[in-house]
Length: 95
Image (cartoon, rainbow, N blue to C red; front, top):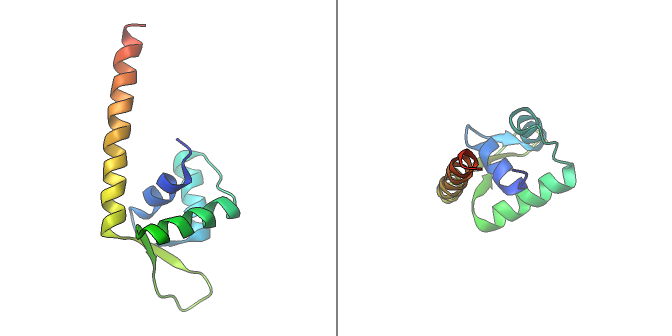
């Protein structure tokens, strides 16, 4: 799985983070390095869709938080991925 949208949402599911923290988190749990262009493009799309929102900050780093709509979308995607994985695993047993 390498969809930046899902990776950013998954990262923010355990709390607010700024861009660099998201990149590091994704690297640690998915072993995928999101470049700055990919990351901030995904952040822009997620904000436009209302799935994340910026949180006030006292320094130059901008943290983001998952919204209720973002959480719902992530839950839907997890359910879809779960069905795909279960189907693939079941089919591999018969291959």
